[in-house]
Each structure stands twice: as C-alpha cells, then as structure tokens.
Image (cartoon, rainbow, N blue to C red; front, side):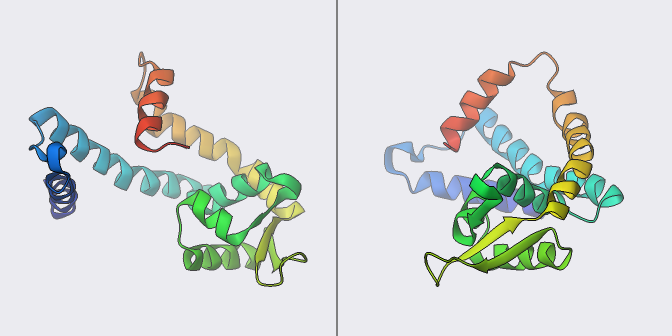
Amino acid sequence: MDNKEAQTAAAFTTEANLQGDHGKPLDSNEEAFLRALGRVMTLLPRVVDADMLEKHPISSSEYAVLVRLSEAPHNQMRMEQLANMCGLSLGGMIQMVNRLESQSLVVCEKSPEDGRAWLATLTNSGWTQLKQASPTNLASLRRHVFSHLEGCDIAALVKVLGRIAPG
C-alpha cells in the first residue's frame, strides 16, 4: 500500500470511529473495498485524461463541463451550479471555464437577470469539440471501466453507488 492509499484508509477509519454506533472497526472486506474504491477514484481520471489529451485539446474534466452545458437549457448554466455539478469549487470552475473560453469552446458573461452571477454558455465550437471528443471518451470508459465489469449487474451497481452519492 502506498502513502496515498494509507492516508485514504486512515481518513475513512478515523471518520468511521467518530460516528458513534457506526464507529466499529472496518472488517477486512470493507477495508479492501474502500482501498480499491480509492485507487479507482485516483486512477480513473488520470487514464481517461491521458486518452483524451492524446487526441483532443481538452481533459476529461473539461469534457464533463461541456457535457453538462450541452444538457442545460439553452446550453447555459450559472457558474456556481456548474461547479457543484462537476464537483469543483467555484474558483476551480472559473479557472476551467477560462481555459475553455480561451479555446472559444465556452463564453462566460454576467447574467442579465442577476448582475452578480456569471453564466457559462457552450459555443458552436464547443459543440463541435464535444462531438469530436465523445467517441474517445466513450472508448476510454469502455476500456478502463466497463471491460472489467463483464457479467456484472450494472443496474445494481448504479443503485449501490446511488446510495453512497445520491443524485
């Protein structure tokens, strides 16, 4: 186990010990699951990023922003909402949108309804980049995730993960 895994396991164990009745030590299967989950959460973004950046000028995180905007009404979303949906701080999202804006994939402008809020909008070039990058993203996910889940009940996995992170 490397240092990062040990820190992750220690964090889970420490958090569990602060939870009263639920503070009993993890059994070996629970601990193994959390360590494996931590490895997946660390490794998966790296390998998908590598695949994306090999063929496109955007990372998997930037791709996810374009996807969220493409699904939003008028391909537009408040920066704070976009940050929350992508699991980033507002500052992190501002930096990411600035990079996407520098490539003309997104425009950022003040909300006409609320002069304090900023809106990110997917551009036509952003749509084009999204369509071009989609096959690479899907192939990467199939190779790094779904090829390892042959014979697994994906719907059941979705339900289990939904109990951990609803939404």
